[in-house]
Image (cartoon, rainbow, N blue to C red; front, side, top):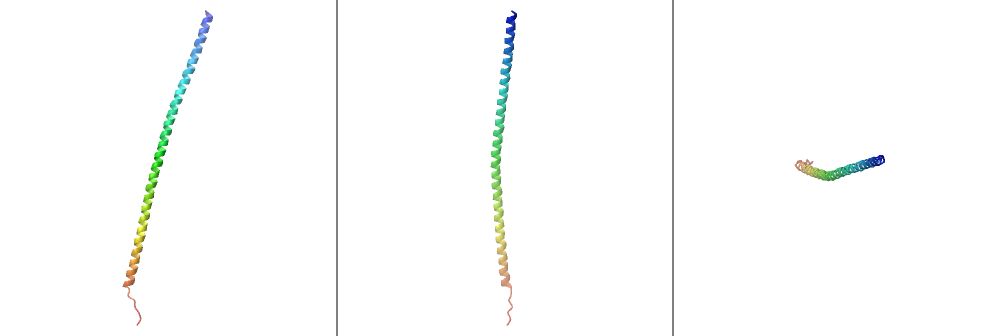
Length: 103
């Protein structure tokens, strides 16, 4: 009887240890799967943010380029207008001046 009880206790101990190992491996795997899922979501969100920020950077750069082009057009117009005015002033100043010729 003592022998049967001994083997029974050994079997129970083996079953307990085996169950504990199986459950700990199962919980570890579930934790790892959750961590992979969280990591995948973080990577997906960061890649979406990167794509969105690169898209907004392109739009911002295009807007800046348009503004610089408008500034250049304004400077060309202003330069042209000032040049025309100065030429008109020179022509009118020349025509209004009397030239004294010796007789």
